Amino acid sequence: MTVITRFAPSPTGFLHIGGARTALFNWLFARHNGGKFLLRIEDTDRKRSTEEAIEAIFEGMKWLGLNWDDDVIFQFSNAERHAQMAKKLIDEGKAYYCYASKEELDEMRKKQRADGKTTRYDGRWRDRDASEAPEGVAPVVRLKAEQDGETTIKDMVQGEVCVANNQLDDMILLRADGTPTYMLSVVVDDHDMNISHVIRGDDHLTNTFRQIQLYKALGWDTPEFAHIPLIHGADGAKLSKRHGALGAEAYRDMGFLPEAMRNYLLKLGWGHGDDEIISTKQAIEWFDVSGIGKSASRFDMTKLTNLNGVYIRESDNDKLVELIVPMIEKKLEISIDENGKSHLLKGMNALKERAKTIIELAESAEFYVAKRPLEMNAKALKLLNENGMERLVKFKAELDNCTDWKQETLENLAREHAEKAEVKLGKVAQPIRAALSGSNVSPPIFQVMEVLGKEETMGRIIDVM
Image 1 (spheres, rainbow, N blue to C red):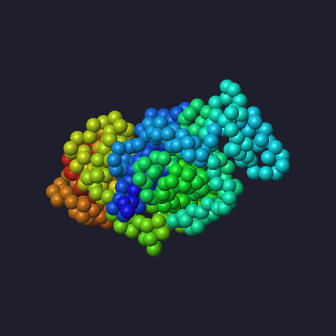
Image 2: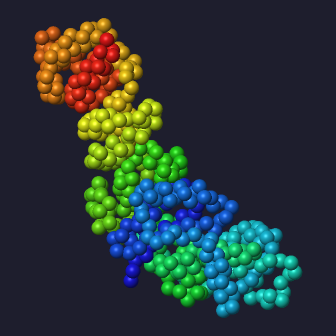
């Protein structure tokens, strides 16, 4: 059997964290088994579906690196096929027209609530003849669901789960205007797309009991189901925007790397021993549904940010430069030339040690390519007070004669100067840091001097004098 999975979001908003993890699990399961991963846009809700949301889903998937196979399926385009299947069930006596009005149904539910019963359709048109239909009423089509026995799901995550069929009412397949409902469309599309495994959130578990009855009525084999627990916030509450339930593109814009996000989402509910840092290659090799836990996982922005820092430190320097250059150019309103890019590349090893996001990395690198004279922050100006400036002027004289412009040589020169002046090294180094970076913090300052080169270093020192 060829494994075929699908991710089927509704285009009513961005690709949120829960959806991204569902997509990742489906993608990994397909790739692990040498199968196919398909993308279906469930756009049957025409009022809420938007082109902007569709593009946001595509962007989010591409940014995460979750490449899909074959063309994207748009569910609404299959509406005629869905309706045909409903009419087939009517012809076979497995579905029927229901002429109950909205007012009738409201009254029915009101009475059920008053009697302390679960509100569900009572089957009032299940066995009535169409000749009894009131004039001028457009009917819906309902599935004639099984009423006796049980419906059982042998779920790959939840185990065997059963529900009594008398708890499942006759769901609507076609609305009064003839359009198919979500429940019908999903089953027909999954069958027509040859989906072998449906991996989705456990909030769909109730839907699955109903959908299995529809599969049986249509005479189709059911796919394997895996219902994964939802993601909660760090406080255990339902995930919301205050916990970080944002769109995938928002995390991109906040400076997260897609490989770090994949790793983090993978660990939300799935595990492989004690492994925390899992490459995409390893994830594909190791992933199996058996590693998914039954408990809800908790989204923790701090953990994600720390993990992102790990990935930044392990990233290729050229790639990081490519990522930060557009950010710096936009913020500083400059164009970075090859010399500036060379400074960024040479300084990257030190820059990426402390950064936890690409935005932090870009901000810490700005001084390498900023317009001169540099703008000094308050703490830098304090370092360049009378004593600091005096120390800088004296040390500049020694730097003028330095011919071996290497980090080690420059540091030794500063140490010797400090010893002669009977001051700590910091008294020499900090004014240099202020002059070269415009700040009181920077990567190791003697490394910065080597990266900038003698001409640029001396130029920046002269700028502050």
